Image 1 (tube, helix red, strand yellow):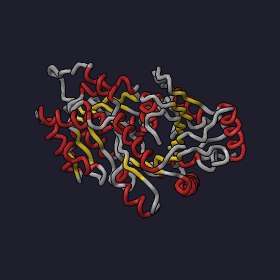
Image 2: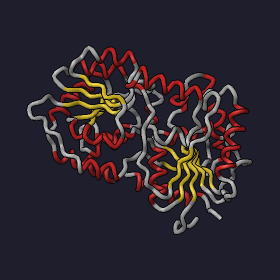
Image 3: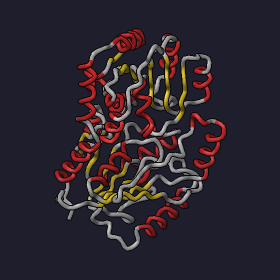
Image 4: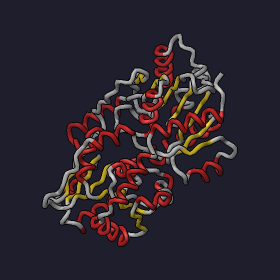
Length: 394
């Protein structure tokens, strides 16, 4: 595999390209910026999904997750939206119909193209065997960027069973597995012995850091200190009770939550005037919020899911040099020098008090340096080196 030549990447996404930025979009963008051709295939929309999104936009605007636009402008990047399926990607009631519709669409979009030299990056195991296989696509290299925890992607036992079955098939076929968390290594060795794999942690865009540099710091000027959290509040990894208790214990601080919230969480926050729920904020607009924070939070549960979660927000917080107070998890323990890690609630709240009092320019510079050393550009360079090591493109 010669890195002097541009490659053709086919990304089979975990979500739509225009949802909140995730690992998959970042890797695809960096590959394209480096001169490689990238075709990003989104998860197919569904009638049920579109209906749910429309209801959210109307009745639960703080919970909606659609409507973003991506400022693309990258010549080598093409984004493809498959046809709308009758039911849904994860809980399909019409798998044969879904498969036929997708495969006809795929053959039409890539008609006349030789994909045998492509590199397929599969970000969600349900793709394999349900929509794509070697009969449809036989790439030079098949890479599975393994999900942090399949439980996060499932909404029922039936879906989880489908995910596990598809993952077993995909891993068997894959030439290489990439994974984001240090703590995944032992799981991979146990469940998929002998399979080639490489650690590819999450990161932050160099553009994000540059835009943050150009965003002025918002000084308090007598206003209360500002505690911020960026992310979802309704996942299996988020400790809503811990976040709500934080709000109650720090009434003299402003507290901002940026991301989707469910109705129950919003109702409890409405009773606390020092708390503001911003809902979804475009990724390009996060800088002004980060510049206004005095510290940032990662209030995770400590469970089997968070054990293998390498949070994107850690790198974004570090880009602003912010003190970070986080629940101690096995994965975050690898980053202890950049966080105040707490093993229980008392130490979590004590960490917030210490972080609010922190006035350490050296620590802020160290966090910022950590972000600069962990960009998506560097991650893609690692990926390309791994592709060279594990396979050869004819």
